Amino acid sequence: MISIESVRTAIEPVLQDNDISKSTIRTLGGNPPVLEISIYSKNNKVDLDLCEKVSREISAVLDQIDDAQEAYMLDVCSYGAERELESSDEIRENIGSYIHVELINPQKGFDKLEGYLDSLENDELTVSYMDKTAKRKAVIKLDNVKLIRLAVKL
Image 1 (cartoon, rainbow, N blue to C red):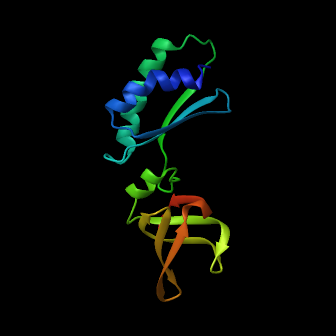
Image 2: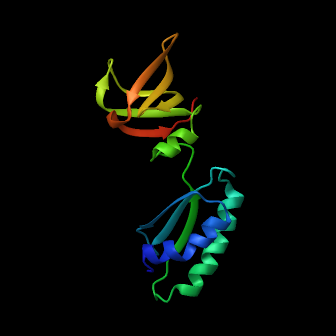
Image 3: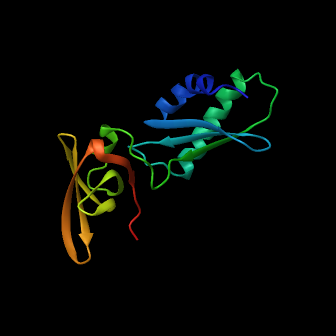
């Protein structure tokens, strides 16, 4: 199968043309193996139409450069509703969103927390959450965050 670096280089113009701000490329087992490309667009929000459009464009590019004899399937998909926030910029873009945070060291009796992201200032998150019927705020240092992702509130 074509290398991930070759794919990344080849599809970069397609991603830019479609305002894709983040992508992850990986190979998954199977027969045939799957080349999975997860995409995120902060402007357009990723929906099925965008995935289909980007998939067609990427497929055309890969057909031109792929000289491997091995068959594979291409899967262009969204990161999903509960995608991980991997940088301070992504965290800032999602202020006001409902999030799930896991801590390295427990703080005030919790090691996980779900609530609304209020701010990111001076390497500290402020999260509003419900403690039974009381609304509370937690201030969490970024270096104590093991995982931060968007969450779906039910």
